[in-house]
Amino acid sequence: MLNIVLFGPPGAGKGTQSAKLVKKYGLVHLSTGDVFRYNIKNQTDLGVLAKFYMDKGDLVPDKVTIDMLEAEVKKNPSAQGFIFDGFPRTIAQAEALDALMLEKNTTVHLMLSLDVPEDELVSRLLLRGEESGRADDQNEEIIRNRIQVYNNQTAVAASFYDKQNKYFPINGVGSIDNIFDQLCEVIDKFN
Ligand code: AMP
Image (tube, rainbow, N blue to C red; front, side):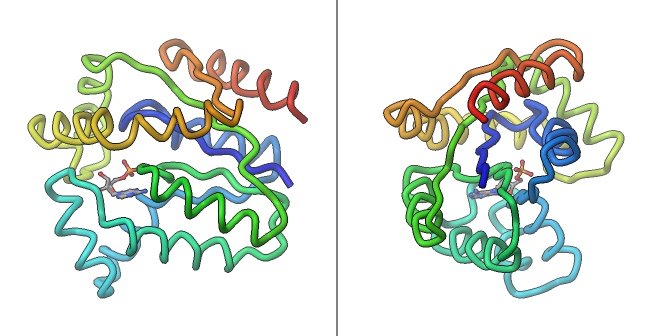
């Protein structure tokens, strides 16, 4: 198996690069943000709960998020590997993911982190908000809060993987193909 955490602040390009990585490596893409949005659209209990936090740009509580992620992993018993996009976002989530992978006799092999400066993130997200209509991308105050939440609560997860020598930062500014090539270089060296 090959399990990759694709990391980085909101607007770093995780979704775009995940789609390309899935195609090349045949992995299952799990985006916690996408699963929450699917639940919001279908007005499930989980969706109603998640919306409360997402509307403000805050994190959905760990327990809810971890249970949901575990259920998604279990829906894919024959996966050759996973790309985790937007998860883990806290140390508690990183620990839960380690335990879940261990249960499957595997591990998280790599954390690839897309580094993008804050001003570039804000303009990318506002543009995405205009194009997609995504509510949390349309308000600069919410965007700034999401970036602050990333800096205060999520960025520490990088050190969790760094300690295990699994952390690889990549410059997330440039052409989509060039960034993709850099990601593939790290993966291919590892594989
Ligand atoms: P994303 O699509 O990854 O930018 O996520 C959108 C929103 O979903 C975030 O701002 C959070 O409110 C929520 N969310 C997504 N993934 C997580 C996670 N791993 N932990 C907590 N909240 C999350």
